[in-house]
Length: 116
Length: 115
Image 1 (cartoon, rainbow over the protein chains, first blue to last red):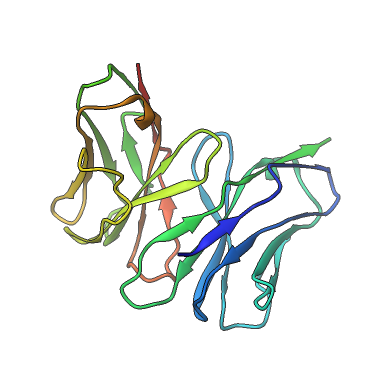
Image 2: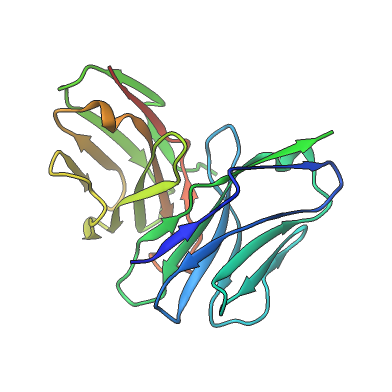
């Protein structure tokens, strides 16, 4: 069975600085998708960034980028120029690319605090 | 446009009672997911709907949990004979199709408290 581990329950970053959130996963599959979701205090989960395992290039969305290390099964999220609005819980998630598989597996989350 | 709507926002009930949670997905979204988020935990997958059928219900924790979807739209998650360990936030998400290249759009969730 696949697992997703986020070893940092909480992180802090100064406004305008850069922070990296860690995520590791375990799978025997070679084709899958990885995601980072943000959950602000309002509770609504928002997709931040998505990575296909077959792509070597790291995904980037504006200030958000990932460091995808397939062999190490590591998928970290880098937030550049942190803003107060980035404060939230961040969840890493895995989904198999196997046809007929629909289940997403989430980590336990990292709470990010942004200091003014 | 309207997002995923869940009701009620909060529900407090006594142990042993049945509860129904409702999810209104984004119009036209064929895929619908239910998750449970317990305090300090990540999201736990419960069930996936494609249209009105549920090809993956592997996450339902016991036979007290059931879900249905009608008209390819609204879904209800029913918990019978609630227990205190059922206390959690129940999140619903929808996407245009079930493929993993389709982003999930989440509702605000229902916070369920069992006394």
